[in-house]
Length: 238
Image (cartoon, rainbow, N blue to C red):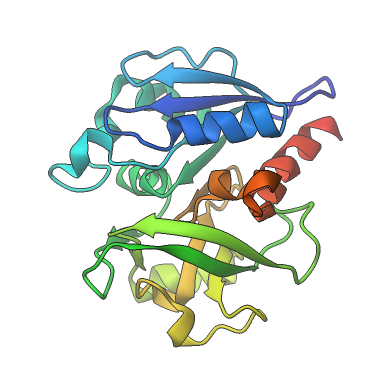
């Protein structure tokens, strides 16, 4: 669903009850990076001609039952799923990643952190696949510094799924050391293979636990997250 006319993409940020990063995403995209952005209320079904849908972080429906399990049934998710099935671009961040998994748009599940504690800190990420819409403009071998904030970010999938993800180059981000190495000690939550973000086989749906919207403002001294959003923008302009 790439734009037929070269222009900046229009983003739609879904707002679920309990979301707390929707305004962060809106601010980063509109005020810092200059994209057109609309909030999309979870009870609506109209995506307002959005080119890219953001499922933001937070605690949709208070994380009752299971993280993302109730949000997956919000009316707007029918539209998001149909949009994705047609090739539309969808990005789930933290709780949004959990929702994508619950909706079956990405494989695997997210379990409680192996420490059983909420983890909030900056982490380092290697870009494992630089050929995606979300990463194509990121400098080769660059290690990103982006914050996490989650209690259930421990990515798990069965052995066959993990092998498939590796074979199809669907692992987009891994937790690493500052110099890009991947030892277990830099895995903040116990995720299999240090996985921090994955993409679907078609390449139009990204789920990631770290928060790029919190690393997009130069005034905060963190801008690596903006590289991901700007990569999307440049894709539509090319």
